[in-house]
Image (cartoon, rainbow over all chains, first blue to last red; front, side, top):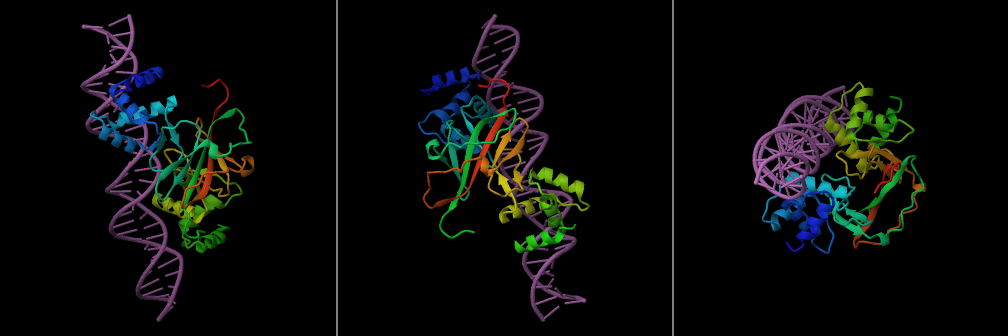
Length: 142
Length: 142
DNA sequence: TCAACAGTTTAGAATAAATATAATGTATTA
DNA sequence: TAATACATTATATTTATTCTAAACTGTTGA
């Protein structure tokens, strides 16, 4: 609970009330050096394992969505049965291993700047995501 | 029904039996110069409007998946409640307008080749997709 | 041509993620 | 500390997708 205050600040600055549940979720998501990817199901499981409090599914959904809106989390565009989220909100990209259902970060430095020449009138680009699907390299595929 | 034979060929060459339903779906998807994006729901609606036969939801799902496997259709990686598909299977990218829930093609020529320096041992890249989210350009956004 | 088989379609049931609801609880404020 | 606005919760609902099992159809080869 050492970092609780910093999460309370973070929440308050975003107009979110610092409740027990939200602080717990912050701890799980941000109380580590490493960023990571998760689904709601996985997040719920982590909270259940490391917390004494119970957090309902609805609260987890609500809070994750609030954090996305505030820019604390990023949704990863992937056509999967469940949504994937990323605690790394810096500009970077992903490999998606379809065989193992696994996401791997690609640092910005490992991809040349994606330069899109086309523009849409009245619109501006908010974000650019690169998803590279990877498969096993053993046998010769079509 | 003029193009039926060409679809029968196409299906047969892919090991799919040319059934009434599949030929109808081919007509809807491929019997036009223009490529387009669709969801299953939209596809079902189009079929209902322009066909005399009824095609069940399960068949539409099965057939779309078979076509993806064969490379006649592409799935567009988008975290949306429904999956989006593309009849344009050439290498290209997309804008996604979140405000209007609209997909727009970006031709390959309009994006510099995406060069990923990172590699994963034992894996090779199967596909690279760029999704650029766009928003209205009027007021100053954060 | 026709029987037999394997693949296909179908309606409806099942599944699962995500959202909505409405009652209860809690943080904030004045 | 009372009032209130916001949150949480369990549960129900919604919706896309997949599954199932029975009926059907295209294909093959005798």
